[in-house]
Length: 245
Image 1 (cartoon, one colour):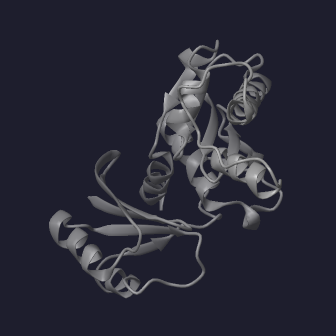
Image 2 (image 1 turned 120 degrees about the vertical axis):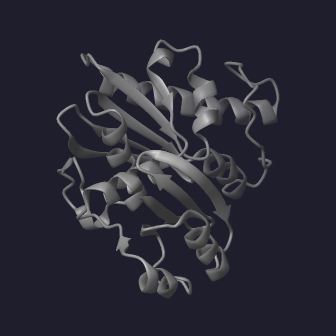
Image 3 (image 1 turned 180 degrees about the vertical axis):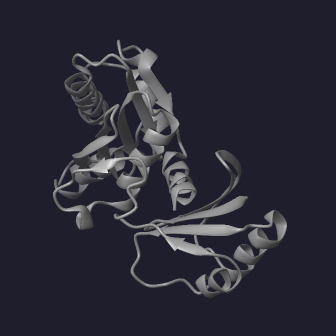
């Protein structure tokens, strides 16, 4: 049963086709239009769809889906295989919820720490019994670089460099790079260590646009064997929600 999964973000929209747990096709859009939606329906014989959106306004192509196939809107009530103990579930980001659902679906016998490297860095833990209590949110990689320039009068804009591997910088640019990238590395290690203490089956799941970059920061750490890269974890979580709906 082909399923269309649409994740509408602030900047980009991701649309993917799944057949059961298999990701068949994915495409990124600045603006997803009706013609593209119709193309998905025709090419893949889509039988149902799910939408997750950070935007309140509806999209022009939504009536096309509603008229032709069952359409589900992902929401915080769709906990799907997890026990959500978040104190204010209505304020929980849908991407965070979909990420832990995806982690639980992919690795049900393990404790899973989901680290999503996007505009912000989020840390979310779901245990072997499917309990989710919440997590942490901190500034993302590019947000940190841009903030140093924005909130000072002299510091330049510096871009991330995955090849940078020094403990300190010997000029302003490398000093900024050391502070930002080593700061994130030590933050990652600190959160991982706090969650990993005394756990037998541990997965550290990296996702989001900076997931691979974070993997490079952690490649020499003692936690490297436990790292799993799942760039499409949120989409997989949304797909898992359709299987239980």
